[in-house]
Amino acid sequence: MNDSQLKVYKVWDLPTRLFHWINFTAVISLIFFGMIMLYKKELGITSVEAKIGLKEVHVIIGYIFVLNLGFRLLWGFIGNRYARWRTILPGKGFLQSVQDYKASLGTGNPQQFLGHNPLGRLAVTVILLLLIVMAGTGLIRAGTDIYYPPFGAYVAEYVAAPDTDPASLVPYDPTGTIAEKTDRLKAFKGPFGIIHLYSAYILMLIIAVHIAAVVYTEVREGGGIISAMFTGRKVLSGKPVDGES
Image (cartoon, helix red, strand yellow):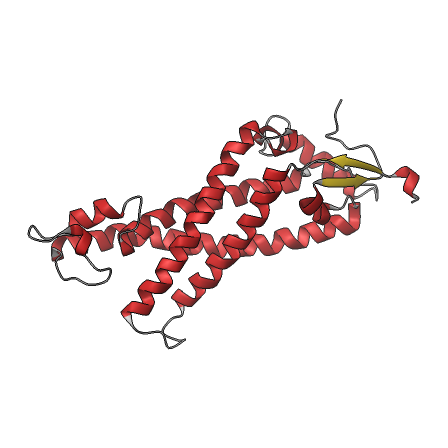
């Protein structure tokens, strides 16, 4: 294939690329600190202060993650063509597009796309749903574990004893709290923690599959998928299925 047969397309706008790398960094950091918290006893971390400190770092990174995700959800309505949800999320004719794409793979001349190919769109949809679930459950656990916003003040007020200032409560310390209410709180927050944890496990698996699929697609179809998330440009040898009409 000579250079004259290649064409450069502007695809991913700057906000979309920034979201991608901020999200990637935040998710990896959250997984790292999450694993430390999960195996803190095995790592010799036993003090309450260390437990709170790890949770605070995890939550602060989580705020960055949530704000970045919120921005991306909005940008999906106002960004460029390939950043918009209508070109990413499955819609009318999606199943047929998957079948057509899978058929093209068997011909040795796979369809090329400026945005995500149909299988990539499906993966992005699943990842997006997992990110939203993790954001919601994470915010709930931030409030119920260490009284952080946006729900922490309400939680502290709920469990605080009548003669105790809710702002004075210390996470994981029952002093100044009503035992019956803290027991109810534990029962309430437990399922959110389980959902958060197993969503993280599923996300880690999908991230691994996603990276492998990107590398495979890069080798099989070309287009500079990986470099496009830095430059915003794809280089294709054929006519893209989702190109401008």
